[in-house]
Image (cartoon, rainbow over the protein chains, first blue to last red):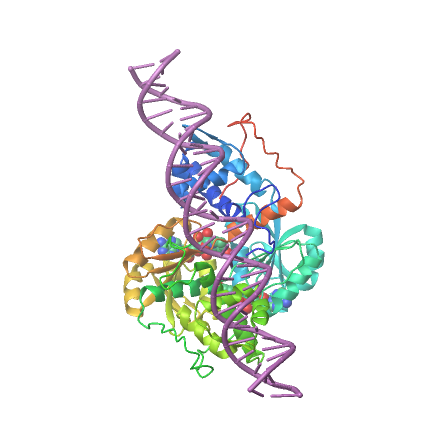
Length: 240
Length: 240
DNA sequence: CTCGGTTTGTTCCTGCGTTCACAAACTCCT
DNA sequence: AGGAGTTTGTGAACGCAGGAACAAACCGAG
Ligand SMILES: NC(=O)c1ccc[n+]([C@@H]2O[C@H](COP(=O)([O-])OP(=O)(O)OC[C@H]3O[C@@H](n4cnc5c(N)ncnc54)[C@H](O)[C@@H]3O)[C@@H](O)[C@H]2O)c1
Ligand SMILES: NC(=O)c1ccc[n+]([C@@H]2O[C@H](COP(=O)([O-])OP(=O)(O)OC[C@H]3O[C@@H](n4cnc5c(N)ncnc54)[C@H](O)[C@@H]3O)[C@@H](O)[C@H]2O)c1
């Protein structure tokens, strides 16, 4: 899912663990809001929806912040994870492509509260220039390089149509953005050292569809091992 | 990421493979539109952004649809994957929660073109009732059970605030929906046999932030292996 | 028909991720 | 102070995923 091939981070935090740390952070925040000050690995794990042994192993990679016989201090653990992820300093985000999805993202309050500031909105459509979304004006994508430099953009969100995604990404990367979140259904190629994560909602739906078909095998998939009926079948309509 | 613990599907397609099949489908569609009728595992793999050995192994789980010395017939392979995923029949989708994100999803044309029909929009806010989004009228969430039954809803998309997500999910499940796509930042608990997939954009950003911090270790994270400074640290501001 | 070139399907191997299980460490009660 | 009860941190086992490498199969030229 990431560009980097190594599954291990420099100082040794496994990728799978990194992907779960934000989950723990969210669970800790929920506990904290409920007034809980200390919690066991069992409690935290169930709040995060994972196995408690896995939680303990994950946390052990950050250091030894628990107390045997007691559990974890919620406030301290929350800080330690925040620091490890790098959330102690805010990061600036630029959203490119302000169609349906881009506008929803720009309006989302959950980003800022987690340390991500959406500081710039860029689009190619002149009709959108100057439009205000979430207290920001949409600016021409031509200004991308200037915006990235001036506003110290760390993360670029690509919410353009698939055809434009690679070009936009190239420009973001050239301007110095090394972290990309891509919503367009395309494979982005980026140079070494740039981190791309993709979110593809159609793929999620398709995975759900697969499991559903497995549950109700009405149309028994009839795998024909014989290479007989080849190239004949009509394919479902599938635009885009 | 899924509710089912087994990483292997009944007839033996690994989860990791299932997650990539939609990728291959997309790549095949692109090739097909470019007029390509046959392609090698190498070409398809690079279009999908994966290793060619992995692609071949993935495809071998569906059957033997390639021809040695030649490659794969694009149209046929596309159909075989579609059938395996269960895309030969359309599926009805209900979107619950029509705020920023829900409206963007309802307006997205890419779902229908891939065999997912958004057939119902539900919200709790009376001000939205009757509003037309993507040719559909927003209906009260009170009608959820009726809608699921009448319109044969197979997949429920939860785009409500986190607080409402579990309740909405419970009702969807009780009404017979066994596939849920959740956008709310919460852990959903569902009975055995129900499939939940989550999309959490904040988590994606946090993972990017982690890797970025690793690249530029300005604030060297200073893991204190000594259990000295414990429970003392003040926590960073982190509202919601 | 035979042979060289090409590409698939599969086997083997390595490494990561997950879970189990337990010793070490801590608290609290007597 | 000592012992019973908890809970963490980790060593070990196991299963899965990814990648390299190769034999089998196919095509086309001669
Ligand atoms: N809307 C969804 O729910 C949804 C779901 C899944 C995937 N996606 C994907 O997300 C992307 C955006 O979806 P959307 O529904 O918002 O599409 P959209 O068509 O509504 O918006 C795309 C926006 O990108 C702008 N744009 C086009 N070329 C550009 C360029 N070169 N530079 C800057 N901006 C440019 C357009 O002007 C437009 O405003 C698409 O790739 C889509 O496939 C969207
Ligand atoms: N907008 C984004 O880009 C974004 C990004 C990441 C995560 N999310 C998550 O997605 C969810 C929706 O985000 P949003 O920005 O669209 O929020 P929103 O507040 O704009 O919309 C939420 C909608 O849900 C409706 N709702 C509330 N309770 C309901 C109930 N019980 N039944 C049915 N509908 C109900 C509300 O009336 C509202 O229309 C949230 O959980 C949010 O955290 C959104």
